Length: 170
Image (cartoon, helix red, strand yellow):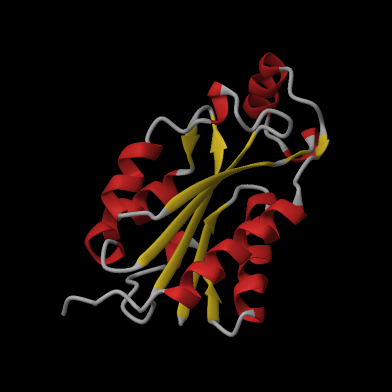
């Protein structure tokens, strides 16, 4: 199947999670494109979309939210999974539960969502971001679990092996 992996990432860590998922899907025989959300005009040539975003102050990055809103009718005709990457050591914390997530999943017809811990390097952050992180008492470092990321990619691949492409409305 033709797969689009599109990820909104401010400092690259969430994009690397998307790339790990893309690698698993490629290894399973899928043709995978990795394109930033702002560069996606449509999803006509894709059977599958994996949409991810970093989470800041309990929200997905606007580029990912905008893509979901713009392309919701097209996305509902495809296999769609979404993922979030939030505060490094607190993936289940309220600050990492995007307010818009349930509505976004419903609007795009997402099959599932996965939240992953992220990477926090204060040296990459703007002053306002450092102030927010200080208040959240997040721990610096790379807390991403790439074994869990690859396992999720394998779950998607397994689902796709069992599924026929969704009909695309023209």
